[in-house]
Every structure is written in C-alpha cells, then in structure tokens.
Image (cartoon, rainbow, N blue to C red; front, side, top):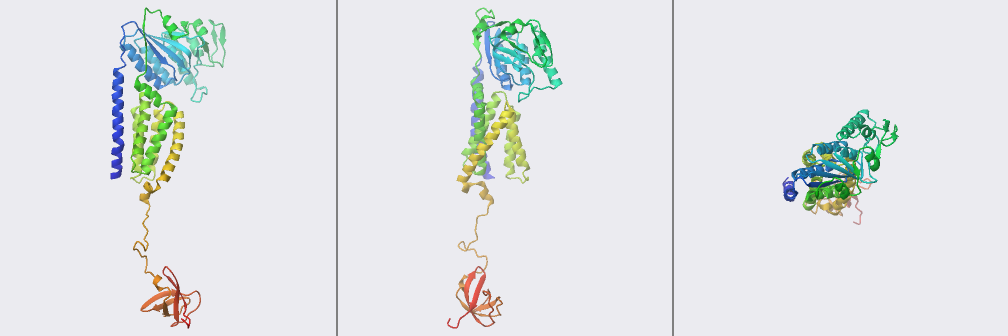
Length: 456
C-alpha cells in the first residue's frame, strides 16, 4: 500500500501541473479573442467546413458569441459539409435563429443533409456555382436510409419549419427529406418522383427561391451583401481550439490511447519505474482535454474514466472474483467512447490501441520479468541443504558403511549400523537376520543394501 501511495503522488504531480498550464492557457486565449471593431459595420466570416457534430456546434457557439460582443452587423457562415448528426444540426439551427446577428449562409462546395437544415435557418443563402444543397434524408451511421415513419415525419417538419422562417417553399424542403413524396417543382419545370430525394444545384436553388444569388468566392459573397465599406473579420479558432482539433484527429487519438493503455499497464505490472505511469496518465489527460475543448466530452465522461481506473486498482487489493475488474474495464471503455465524436470510429481506435499496447506490454514484461508484480505472489525460497534446511535426516553418510540385518530383509527391513537402527531395502533378494550387509545406494531416505561378501 505504501508503494501504491508513492506512485499516486508521482502520477498526480505532473497531471496537476499540466492542468494548471491548460487552464492558464485557456484564460489567456479567452482574453485574446475579443475583436476591436467598429459598431454596426463588422461582418464576421465563420468557417463551417466539417461534419455536423457537437464540436462544430461548440465552435459556432464561440464564434457567434464573439460576433455579438463585437456588435457585428452580419455573419457570413461558410458551409461545406456532407452532413452529420441531427441533434447537433438542431442545436446549430437554434443558435443561428437566436443570434442577435443575422446570418448569410455561403454554400462553398456542398451543404447536404444536416448542412441543408443549417443553411435554411440563415436569413440568406448564397451558393457557389457548382455547389449543392438537399439530400437530407435521415440515415444511420453506416449510411443506410432510415424508414421509420416517426423519424421521417419529425425531420420533415423540422426542415419545413426552417424553410418557412424566411419564406422558402416548404414542399421543396420536404422533398429533400421524404423519398415517398411526389412534388411538382413548378419553378424548375420538373417533378420530384417517388423514391428520390431532392438535391438542388446553385442555379436551381436561385430559381426556386432557396438562394438569393451565386458567388464564386467569399469576397463576391460579401460584395453581394451591399454593405457600405464593411469591416471584415475572419473568425480564427483559439489556440486551445486548434490544439483540440489536433488531439481529436483519429491518428493522434489512437496514439494517445496506445500510450495511455501501455503506460498504465506497465506501471501496474512492473511497479517502481514511475515514468510509464506518469506518461500514460498524461496521454489520457490529453485525450480527454482535446475532446473537452472540442466540445465532444463532458465532465461526466472524465468521471466515468476515473471511476474505471479506481475500480481496476481496487481489484488488486479487494477480492471480488473479477467483478471490480469487469466494472472498471467497462467504465474505462465507456468513458473513452462517450467522449469521442463518433463512437464507432472510437471503438475501432480503442481496439487497435489495445492490441498494439498489449504487444508493447508483453515485450516490456518479458524484458523486466524479474521486476514483475507477479513475483510477489510466487514463493521462490527453496528449502535446500545449502540454505541450511533439512526435510529429514540426511542418509548420505551411510553410503559404503557395513552393518548387520536386525530383521529378515524381504526385501525391506531394519539394519544396525553401529548404534543406529535404519530402515533399509535390498535390490530384491532375501537376506536373513543377523547377516552382514553393506550400503550400496542412498536415495533421499531410501537406503539400499546387499549381502556383504566374505572378502569385504
């Protein structure tokens, strides 16, 4: 227990220092985000060129807050996304609707599925030539169309409500969601047939009243707003946001999991080093920190992970027949998966990390086998003669000695060697009582004799 206490102190000290550094950086970054701009003439350009998930929502939440604090007159939201999570899209839509700063969505490339819903919540939509919106049918994580009537009905009404916010045709938005609808597209001179989901090109979106105009670049989109000498501010993610984006990259995330799992496993199996445990804990801190600042993880995910660590440690000291270990492992896995933006990809990363970490731990444990924790549970002391231990009287001194059979040897019996009576055996022959014998072999406590010859 004293050893575990010392390890805990060695692990916690660098972790506390790291958290202090992170919090200090967050405060400095927060102070540096305020923009110095003139009231009523500022346009904030905000990029949204990623999947629609909680990280994008947190990114836009910070950007819109800064735009409101700067008293901006307009937000130009540059969209380029293939969609994502419905719940995150709903949150972003509510953010755009509730903002004091009106939004112009500039579709640069594509804004399909959940991206279309985000664009519909903007007061204006500007599209780049060759870009598209639509194809907003609800699919699962593997891309398979969901045909649940309640889900389709809910998402259809959300899309129609978003379209009606700025007097756009709700039937067109419904045709983007529900493949069973047949919609006559009068402005476009065609019909959306049953089994299809509607997608609009930039030109068709303008014709249908879904986009105000087209623009090839952000500068052209700004010119189309007809603002008098606007002060254009491009929102830049803070240093912590950029760090979070780096730490949540799938490759970096997998590396952190490998280092974390291997480091802690090595420290538990081969205690005394200290460095593997500290490095492992720092790797997990960076993993959860990156997901936290990116908006993926909450304190409950971190708490679940810490509970898993504590349960696994408890398994070493509290007999639970593996129950604590199973609960600890489940808590660890749940904390890692819930903190990730995509649990499916996170599970693949975790599986790969476990396999690679197991290989690393195997070679390290083999190299330092003499220091392994398992040595504490193995009795290695040998009760040898060299160590001064004797399990019974030593009969080796009888080898070659002569004596007299006290009893008939058939083949076992008793013989006298000087004043000592010893249990002996023959090689199978019969020796009568009072016959002379000689010891020819000693095997532990087994003394073998034969008749003594006349010439001996």
